[in-house]
Amino acid sequence: MSVTVSRPDRLVPMGSALIRDIPPDQLPKVVMPQCEVRPVLKGQKALVTGASSGIGRGIAAALCAAGADVMINYVGNDAAAKEAAEEATHCGCAHRGRAIVHRADVSDEAQVLEMFARIGDEFGTIDILVNNAGLQQDARVEDMTLAQWNRVIGVNLTGQFLCAREAVREFKRRGVRKEVSCAAGKILCISSVHEVIPWAGHINYAASKGGVMLMMKSIAQEVAPWRIRVNSICPGAIRTPINRAAWETPEAYAELMKLIPYKRIGEVEDIARTAVWLASDEADYIHGASLFVDGGMTLYPGFEAGG
Ligand code: BGC
Image 1 (cartoon, rainbow, N blue to C red):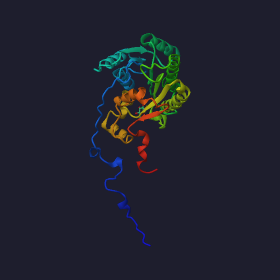
Image 2 (image 1 turned 90 degrees about the vertical axis):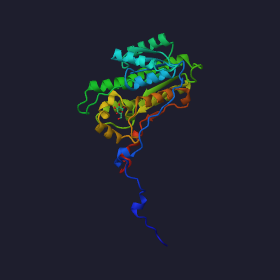
Image 3 (image 1 turned 45 degrees about the vertical axis):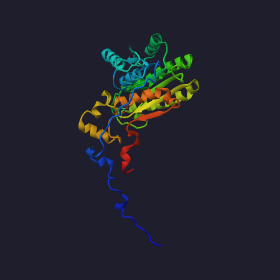
Image 4 (image 1 turned 90 degrees about the horizontal axis):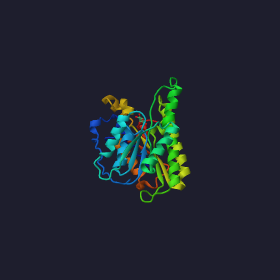
């Protein structure tokens, strides 16, 4: 009997160097997608929390462009909220909805109730809640103050609960509006890759997002028979002010790319497009899902070799 012994170097095909060792200029160029805007949310009423900047602002604009009327919630910056509303309604799309702004701290129950009362007055009802408001207050565990812990949990987790509760109350009260959607309502929780990836130095943030994951899934399990869809979008590193330090310099960007197999940072539009689709009837059978929009960050690229 003859035994063939392969030489180890034959087992490794040409060009199979570790990805982390390939110079970026030898990889295909990044091409951003060009996507058509369609009025898939025509006639729907939406609330986007934390929408005066970053991901929330992009989602508000995309929902408007897809035909929804949108309430832009914000907490601090009146001028930025007004700009966000203008941006949302001047997108050049024929079907765009209208945008209004509302100041409220989502971690405060009374302010959330007031905000939902206003959305009722202005829009009559709500069809889509985008639970986006969130913040980071980073510190090593031994230095983290209770105030930092409570603020992040308060906005990122309790704020999502309070808004989801009010939305569910309205969705159940009103039921399906057949003319705009086959669901009685949609809730999108903006979570993070850090609902599964532990994050040293950010324990309050990671705990809040881990909490969002099971809150979202538990609400989804509870309200599904009422035809209320509940899902999360889990962004990876998206180019916004919250993570400026991670992309601002070429050195930081190169470091970040070690965590992203798809080799580009995410843009706000990547999340905004996902939100429109997930809120639309095109995604009608998607329920209780955490949809990672992260260029592969949750593939743990550090394990490309080793482990
Ligand atoms: C955080 C960003 C971070 C990204 C990936 C997000 O949830 O807000 O600061 O860049 O996760 O780590």
